[in-house]
Image (cartoon, rainbow, N blue to C red; front, side, top):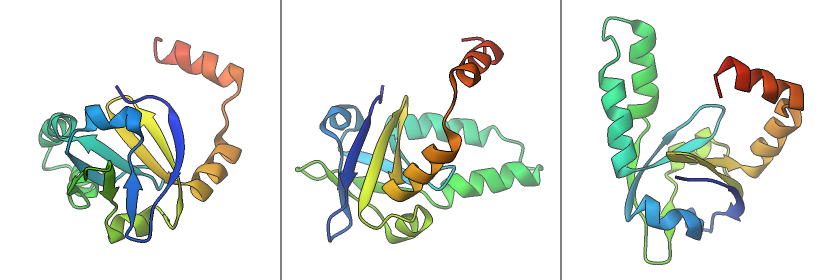
Length: 143
């Protein structure tokens, strides 16, 4: 399970060092795709396959479902983790996430979120949950 958050960066060759606590679970190959809220999702291959099975179940006749599937599949790239624990972020995905240098890497259970640190800071400034928000959410979602 991916947990925690890490400040990191990409180098001149657009490689991100995967936080060491994530490397074993991520393995040697992963799938990177567009996420939600202008971040990227990095899935271990096994979790990508689980997610892909869920996408296959969506109704083909529903245009919203088709767009949802295209968002993830159409932007997915299988990538390798090198011996130093680095993964190259493809150009189209860097552009989508406004990724230039400084990153915020967030564990999100079955996947990793990668954010431009500037975008992350802006999101956190406007989306910070209060204690009441958290309590209501826990009740609403049965946690």
